[in-house]
Image (cartoon, rainbow, N blue to C red; front, side, top):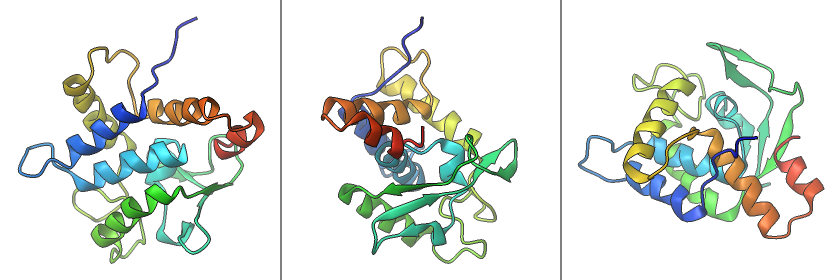
Length: 172
């Protein structure tokens, strides 16, 4: 069996820093915020791209995952179930940063396309993520945004979070 790609927290935040490098061609604060969001929540890329601001409750520190972008359409999550994901305290600054960028869009989308007319397409971010990986990592085989989800799972288990709690966070 192939071992799936997993990143250390240091590698994850190298991606965040990469997208936050001002005055570079790869500067994209939305991508930096999305990278942190995917890591801290364990969401799939399609689930994050479908988020509305009404799905995020800062006061209760939760994100409701109840839809995804799949093949260009908004659909139910992969397993058909919605999930309430806790917001890690470190994630709040990235959510606030994203709010400053996209809060006033008419569709209430959290992550927006370059034109700011609709939600960010998952493959747009995947392309940028893979390009960043070629610059940041030696081995880029099997690297995709899904590696951030696996990285969270690994971090939870290595920090002795009970398996049932880790599974609940990842909606397994």
